[in-house]
Amino acid sequence: MPENTSNEALEQLRSLADAAGRAASRLPGQQVRARGARRHRRRATAGAAAAVAVIVAFVGGGYAVIGEPRSSSVQPADQSPSPTVVPSPSSPTADPSTFPTAIPSDFPIDRDLPDYGSDGEQQGPAADVEIREFAPCGVPGFPVDIVPIDRLGVRYAAPELEQFRLVHLYANTREADVALAQVADAVAECPQEERDSGSVAGHSLGRTSLGDDSLVVVTRYATDAVPQLGVDQLHIVRTGPAVLVVTAFGAYEPRSDLEGEWIDETTDLVRSLADDLQARL
Image (cartoon, rainbow, N blue to C red; front, top):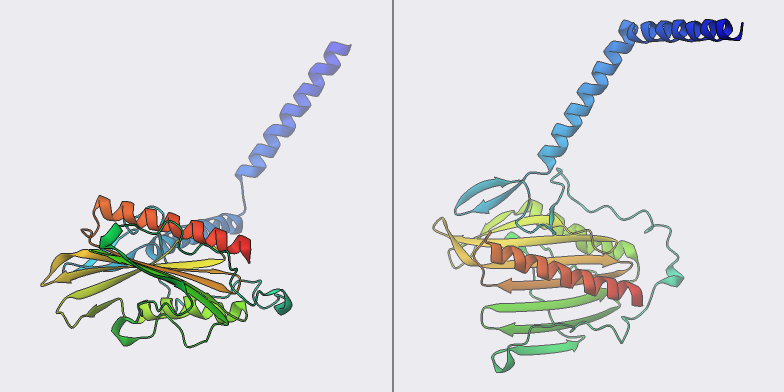
């Protein structure tokens, strides 16, 4: 008897499983169409994401479509119609009483500066070090008109290289957000420009996932449709109400392996400085 009972139970389970399988395979037409619509939406979303990942940069007198900048640590920025940076969710709710009122005196802004001996020249660290203005086509990028409550900068120059580092401390995160938004808007309005020298500068906007928000602009040059030696980087990172800006110029061949390594090294430096600044604020 126990064996027969067991066999009967197994047969019942098989019958239930078969019935369930047949029911599942006969979905109503409405559900089938809904599934198809969802798949279509997923394909459309994937296609849109792929399109967003493509940026256009000026190269050799024309435009070249590239999937990402040469550096693996720099990702293309979202090229939406309005690239204005959106303040982080914490910005409106942050308690103003917790914001620092001065840049920490022990922040090592001059750490790991290049050293070319007598061929190099250093200015700062000091509050009056001025950074080279970034204003493509005359469109204001950085610095912004908002006056920081504290600032600190350093500059180092040598043959075929130059580096600025600057920290602006603002009264709140909303003011700090303006710095990133203005740079993004400036590049969107002027992705390429003619210089007085006759060369053409092409600006590529990307993101580096540093601090609370960050942007990087890589500028390359061409004369008479021929790429020229020399690449500019502008890194701007917000951490709380502070904005860290690092600009660097190097005489590298555009889109070469050496250029890529240099951009990666600069990004690592900016990450280290941003982490250090965040820990001290």
